[in-house]
Length: 100
Image 1 (cartoon, helix red, strand yellow):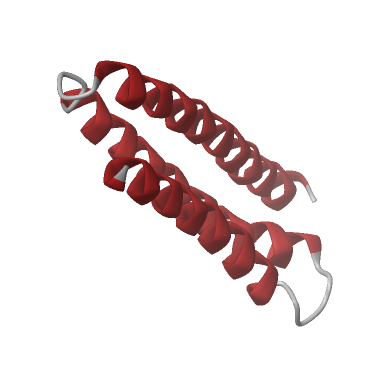
Image 2 (cartoon, rainbow, N blue to C red):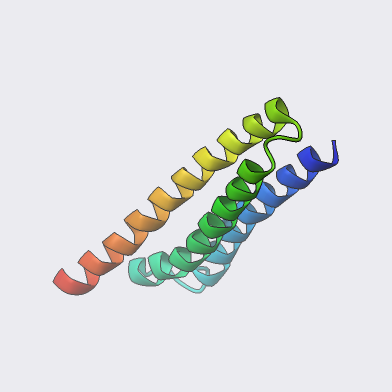
């Protein structure tokens, strides 16, 4: 039960950090470059945290295989979503900077 609660808190903290930091940094005015720039770093941090958590769970899968595998898959999918968002943000920043 402790591991389940720890993983849930860790994932929630990573998601909260990404969204709250990005929105707080972009609150001073709507400029698409500033907004995307302020979201790129928190999404990268959240992605890194989720990937590390998934790796740690993968190494500890022998202890409680069903429970840990369930959370490992969920966190890995969440990390993939965050990584995709982070990649799209960084790519769009590159395109906006280069061509606009």
